[in-house]
Amino acid sequence: MPSNNEWMNRVKAVEREHTAMRFASEYLLNAVQQDPTALKGNLRVRDVNESVERLEGTYTIRLFAEFETSLRTYWLASRITDPPSRTRDLLDGVAARCRIPHDHIQNAHAVREYRNVLVHERDEDVDPIPIALSRRHLCMFLSFLPIEW
Amino acid sequence: MSAVPHADQLRDEWLERLSSLIQKVQTWADELGWSTRQIEVNVTDSQIGKYKAPALLLQEDAIRVLLEPIARSAPGAEGVVDLYLMPAYDDIASLYLHDDGWHVHYMFPESPTVGDIRDAASKPLSQVTLREVLDAMKHNAVQ
Image (cartoon, rainbow over all chains, first blue to last red; front, side, top):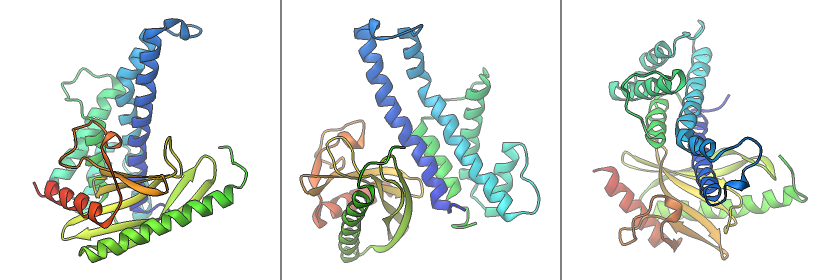
C-alpha cells in the first residue's frame, strides 16, 4: 500500500505533468500559428488553442482524482464500512477521523467545488484556482493522514 | 516503456550519483543544524524501469524540506533532483547534474525574476549555496 508521502507525490506528479504539457502545447500553438499547414486531418488552430486554454482545468480534474483515490484507499484501510459515495462526505469523514484543521478542510473543499464546476460545466460563480494552489491545498490535507495505512 | 540496453548499469550508475549527492547534502545540512533523515522513494523511468531511489528529509523547527530525485536525464542534464517545502510540496529549487557537477537553480535574491524555477539562475552546489537556499526559504516561509 502506498505511503502517505507516496500519495502526495502522486498529486505532485500530476502538477509536474501539467507543466510539461503546458510547455509542449504552447510550443505547438506557437508553431501552428506560424504555419497552420502543419496541422493534419481535421485539426484546426482553434482546436489547439482551446486545448491550451483548457489544459490547466483538465489537469486539475486529474489532480483531484488522485487525491480522492488516496482518501478512498485510506477509508477502506481504516474502516469496516464502505466509503461515502459523495466526495464532500468523504472529505469531511476523513477530516474528522484525522482531526484536520478547519482551514485545510475548507481549502480542500474549495478545490473540490472548482473541480465540480470543471467537470459538470456549471455556471456557478467559482473563482478558478491555479493548479499549484490546488496541489498545495490537497497536499496539506493529505499531510494529516497517517504515514502508513 | 522501452528499456534501453544496459538498463541495469545505467540505473546503478544513477543511483550511485544520487547516493553521493544525498550523502553530501545530508552531511552539509547536519553541519548547518538541520535534522535529516534518508528515505526511499519509488521512481519510474521510461528507459530503466521502476526502482527505489534515496531521498532526504530535512527539518529545522517547524520547517520541513524534501530533496527528491525526479529524473535520471533531461535536456542538457544528466540528472534532476528537486527541493520542496513540505508538506505542501511547494517548489523551492532544482538541482541539475551537468559538467560533472550538481548546479542549483533557485531564485537567489540578486537574480532576475522568472516564471519557473528551471529558468532561474544557477550556481554550483556547495554547502554555501545550500545554506543560501535554505536560509532564503526559511525567511520566506515565516512571512
